[in-house]
Length: 443
Image 1 (cartoon, rainbow, N blue to C red):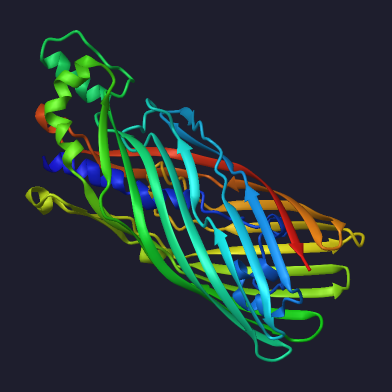
Image 2 (cartoon, rainbow, N blue to C red):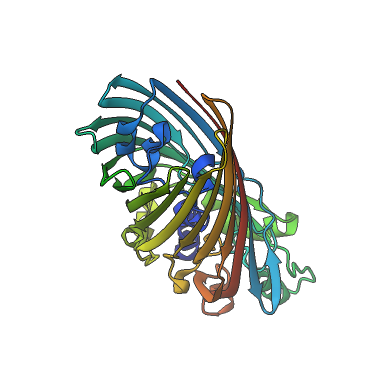
């Protein structure tokens, strides 16, 4: 029973950590072309995400914008000299912004965005299936915002972040080779070879969490602007996750149902941190047509040292889990440029270096996190002075992770007199294409 519950707890790690592997690096199609810089730029309604203080410089009565991104990501794992590749769907993070003028120096608006959203599918029977088969994760944030331009050069802003999310994931429960050894000991000719005998589907909905997004922006002169933005940590809480076990065939069901049936009753609750984000930015306009920007972002991943899992059934509460993750704070550096080629056409380019927070000694394949290099290109076309159509393309290239390890328990090993402690080791690669399209309207 202890081994069984440990396995469920290990599965629950996926609820949050999956977000790190493909943490959304672009929400705005316009700014995505500039390496998603924006902390020291006056972006109208979109400033509510990058730096609420920028909203204070908005010179429009009403500013509306919407962007959608399509993340096509691929992860690869090398196990025993063989490469395995994910078969992922397309994730579609988005952002919708609306802002309006109250007074000349007071602005307000609302922002809706998806700060985390990913899908990863390693397939059912790959060698690491006992750790992860697939994950679909989505989080949503609504942020009402207000900004006050204190002086012509200085603005401050603040927004209330209201977030929630859901997860759907699958994981193998029994190692095929261990079950085959058990079948052999029973005198059975049945074998599973590389087929996962039993898997579990886990779904959970996180309750609403609250945080804040604050910032300040200052014009040093007509060419230089600086800004700072802080998004607070939030805690996403799953009060009751639901589990359902499936079997490869009737042989697996007949043997394993007495051992694994309890999983269907072992609902759990968990708390998962969404870390704080502190970003410093500077923008420089050497020419009227040219804008350069640089952002340095520090994400407080060090808050994610352990994941605590508590079971709802008092009969199994003694098996509550405290799983080590040992993440560290990580920097992301963003550089962007925008050039007004004509009065209707802007061209953009950007470059991101996103440092990894993960510990390679606790490296689950549902989190193929690693340092990533991300170039981008984009443009905006204005068929009308008040209407902009924005396009961008971001490419994500992971630098790779070798010898990454993940400890886990073999549920059946103890029944064969073996040590149930196992370690899965692999080399990982990851890359992604992120096209974006957006539209904005103002007057």
